[in-house]
Length: 630
Image (cartoon, rainbow, N blue to C red; front, side, top):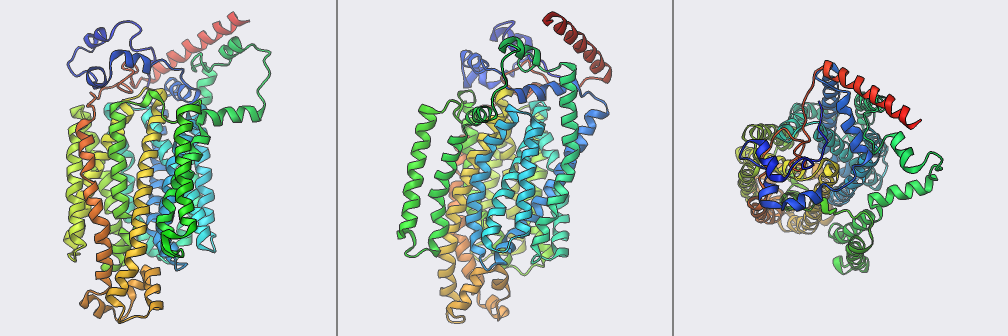
């Protein structure tokens, strides 16, 4: 593969480029989203080391075994990661129920979503400032530590801490491997390749159910602990390949003058002392806007956690601690806005990513996650109680959404490849999602038949897959390669914030409405202690005796259905909001360019002979540069 990195307008005007393309479908940014001068401004940046180093890999890989070896290694990681995700999603309710604190799953959802989301811009900056493999190594370390903490936990607090660290590492791995795929594919193939990379989730949806049923859902510790070994071992091959390719490219002198040692010495002077570690670290943190990320994380955590904690606090929301959290969180959020506006040297919201496609994608995915987490935070818990499925069938059903998202996402990517568009496909996906969520809302009114529950989940996954692929493509196509990681990370951050708000709302509804509904429907059968046990564990709720009488009289299932009704109604209403943004987004033409801004930066595969010829040319150029310098 190779890329042409020259400025797309350095040898002609925008109109010249239109004629050179020789076809009508010009990228929407040039004709409706931004003016040509805005595009020129978007290209006035200095490319950072991590981006330059990943582009230098184009000089190492061709059509041969090295290229396919990289893809095999990447697919191995996605397989292991998908198996981990599918099983940990099943185990999570049982990990909290094991300490009779099932409701704390809402608090975990809020914190993990926020920290995972705000960690992505941080990890993206690490990938840009150092290299992709260094950032992957950083993420897998967090993943492993988190898995070990969960597996060894003796309190629900340890589970919470472990899940936060585990989720931060897992989301970093997922984000970084998606970033590597975006680095080495053109925008016309990117949606399809991302879909293919997610296909292991389909296989593992069934494998995960077999694993979880074999281990038993109550024995969840080993379910987390085994992946502290499996996933790092599977990531090792791709890390080895990327580090080798990075070393090879540097040896060949394939890195651009911006990052080459010789150019650096020419610009800075060979006698300039190396920066002290502390100063260098502070510059890295400043470039990442680490202070702004911390402000944002703490602000949202403090504003959202009261929704999950108020049920167990004295006087609920009137508790002084709850009020203090709201106030301090609001003040920190205002401080964050002021910091980003006036003081941050490298604000999170760079002007280079502010375009119509990105903003519309943020609205779509933010609302997608907001509505999705309102309905899905306790969705699997509700399903477990109101159905009599076996553990294996329950696991199969839980993974329907994952299977559908992966399968339909691949199909959506294929449609993008051959239509070279994504806008109206995404709008249709948003409509399908409304239908799917509507069916689930219908099920909460007592119609929990297999046909309704399964069809609702399949249709929801169809709409969600099309929408997610559309937002991802639009965001990545709307920025230069230098800002690919930033734009992708910011989109992920805002969607995670949406998910956190959704989790907080769901947790508030669950922790307040479910105890009241249980008291309403089975208060004459169970005393307060027994009701607390039912509320605290979905296993107890499902096996509460007399189970047959409960099902016949619709007692406990009705309590759970009424609670689910309260969560799915606002989720359904919020599903209509993204449609507006879907119609307003740009509709880039998807071709063999890396993005829709740098139209001359092509992604093409080359033969091994072409790679070797370029290696020789680079070696000769390096020798001449060294001789000139001496």
